[in-house]
Image (cartoon, rainbow, N blue to C red):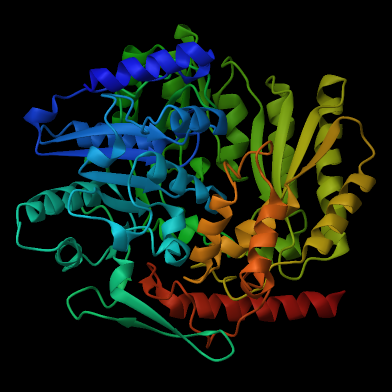
Length: 598
């Protein structure tokens, strides 16, 4: 424990009266003596504590690494701007919560890239942690900077700043990367550059951008990506857990935050992957193959986690929970065991199918929260186009049964701006939400509160829509206004995502390495916590792009032919580019048929 730094931080927090920053020392945190371990890893979540502590993946990797006596794993988060200013004013480094160790003293610092708009937070963490921002500027004494998660599927915008991107499942790869890097550190005669090259040699899931050089055509399009060494992977493939999924430990002693977080509950991943192949969904592609945990494993983990935390809610996690093969047995047994203890069972990510319709009966007597569903679109022909085979009648029947069993709120997730979207598709969103609210009145005597949360569609890498352009900001503003103007029931709320943030997401998720300069420059001009409404300054981004001669539309709005090389093409997803091209072609045919029909 760095006692001197801890005392300075406590003095600083007490002086400026920032009680919300008194984090660390939580129940179930793991503190190891640095002298007893071979290497130290800091999981640095590029957002605030309240969001990072709600991220299940952080708890998984934290538990897994600390279960191995060779390694110590600690946590750090991006501070809010006021605390950042205080740290800089006091000349104190960003530190880990477990031992108050400055980040630059760790062996490895790892980032989970969950949302592209959070990328500038990485600079805040590195800079406050006294780690050089550019990979090329780091010395032998600096930690290895790695990154994984959905954002790593297009690593190019962060290529100059991250030493190694880890693609795919993290449970086995983080352990392997750590063991290799610690071994290479003993090779004193090797330069840091050489160590990174040897680290990724033979690791087909690891991408070290320093050894790949993009080449551009005169018109700005990507011409090629050249390897500068033959001993780094020619093609990067996502890592997949090789062991039986049941054997991968579930974090049953999660670190319990002392301040309010987005999700304060027990979270148990019951299934990884999704049996469906929706064309808009990146997760269904990158999380293949489909894997399940057994009911007994889930129940045992729930019992132990409840014993270690005392939480009053258990959430079962997956991309599509009602597609879990033993769904009814699982929900029944969880309810039977935990209902007498006053523990509610939360089942998010429900697909509208027969198992969804059985949920209200299964959860009879369990404390009810809101019902959350994701129809995505409201009309059957558009659902066929995006490959989400559900029907409205099943949705209405399931909601009716839920209202009969005590549910009183519904949240629906939709998208606008999908390829081929028509005005009738927007009409359908409002009509569907109002129909569900009306069904509530039929069953309960009052209109049920329904929130239709409408996101702006961003074409993501490694999906069949990756060649499509994103809609313009003018279209999104019109669509949002139109949706709100159509709502007639006071019980129905249309909630639309911020257009400017979505436009920025479109640039960052589809950008190439030339975007990196704009990322860093915008951070230097003051961009902080862009995912937070109170901090986001879109004009800062658009002015930086303009000053650097970057056309955002070229990245977000331009449609691409399937023959064009994409910045993320060095990463080969589970089914490969050929599958994505075929699905893209089928979508075009269906869109043509829809257009002809109207």
